[in-house]
Image (cartoon, rainbow, N blue to C red; front, side, top):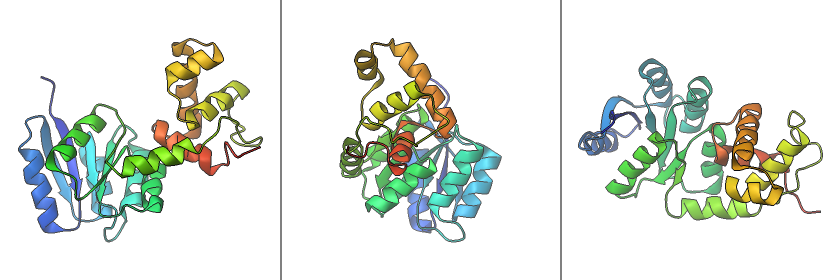
Length: 218
């Protein structure tokens, strides 16, 4: 068994934060290394403690969860942020994804869902809770493969095509077949795209592409 995931909890509600701490502390693969009661404290502690995963509320004093997430991911992109909030509107979901969150759960989530999400994000995955996942998939499915003509000038033409297919929701294997490329080549293109766009993961790249007008109808 590998080392326990180091987790930081950020929530301004004391009872909820303590409940989360007890829940995660009971999981053998998770080590709660700190707690924060506001966004500014979450940023400071994350930079100091360098946890693997942060459970982040969105509505907090001093600094909201979206801005805290953006600051943390910008300075420590290896830290996986899982948003755990009451807010399920699309604006909040995608603001969190744009900021670099790798997961989004509602506070009504079952205990097993929360621990599973922490483990998944700690392993490098992106995870969305039920209902939230439906919103995300509907948003991504609206994308088309044609990149906007003036979008992302830092990308090569081939990278723009790959990004367009990523924005359509296609996985690397499907993109490789469509473009007659090896999966390794597509993976390299995707890594270059993420680096150039300064995004932490696939979901964030898709949102950024859509924001820039990628995939508008002809």
